Image (tube, rainbow, N blue to C red; front, side, top):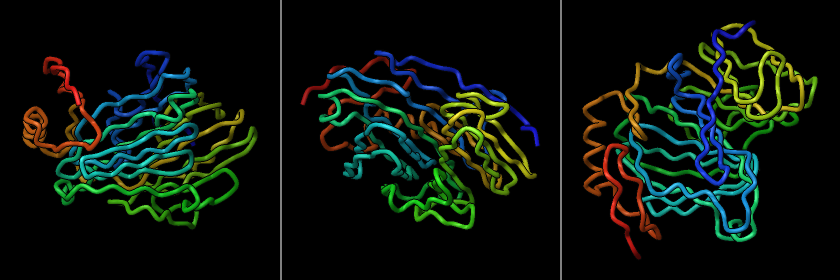
Amino acid sequence: MEPDLVLTAPKRDLGDGFVVRRALPAPQRRMVSWFTFLDQMGPVTMAPGQGLDVRPHPHIGLATVTFLFEGAILHRDTLGNVQRIEPGAVNWMTAGRGIAHSERTPEDVRASGGRVFGIQLWVALPRALEETAPTFEHTPASALPEVETGVRLVLGEAYGARSPVKISSAMFYVAAALKAGASLKLPDARERAVYVAQGSLHGAVDGQLLVFGAGEVVLEAATDARILVMGGEPADGPRQMWWNFVHSSHERIEVAKADWRAGRFGQIPGEHEFIPLPDDPPPPVRYP
């Protein structure tokens, strides 16, 4: 079965050679099932003293899902959570009515330098849960089912297994490391996508997102490849997306903008910076 759509994620250099690729949203496709956003970080090797520094920023109406292939990231949020994430584990953060967080390279990794390679997804919350209380959950790699060699179920149900991560809707997310010549059949669903993070499949190279509808699909690896498989039922309606905010209501996003501008999302312990709204002037420098 051929894909309905093939998207190539554009590259963006954030400085110091740190490259991200954004596959969703795209002009041709805003969402796949409940997935509204897909960013690939790296792979990049950072010199000693360099690191990833995503300063505090807000979210509403969504859940963030962070999964690493290489490296480490330290998560902090306005609930007081401080969590290091390493390869194979997953961070699920429900923003709900509002949360802010930061993502930085841990100090020990920054001191020595090292690799970073991973994926962040955003999942739209069902309308009934868009204003739920924010939460954060970390699940270690050892708790995620390996459904076959190199194929790990990160979220939801697929291949006869269930991930322990508590999710908000009917979906699945699978991370697979395939050897050249290996094949993988996609789980059944009305909406599905495959992202090639590294290597190539027959018919797709790294940085491409393949979108499929219902029907049997068998992927074949042309080289050793890292891929992500995601999908599920269609979301319960379209979503508005502006900067880091996702919601069914444009008016609610305007409220979130005003709340961030006024500092009403709360303080992250240990942080003294923030990212301003894109249309606001840079903030004055804050000191501890």
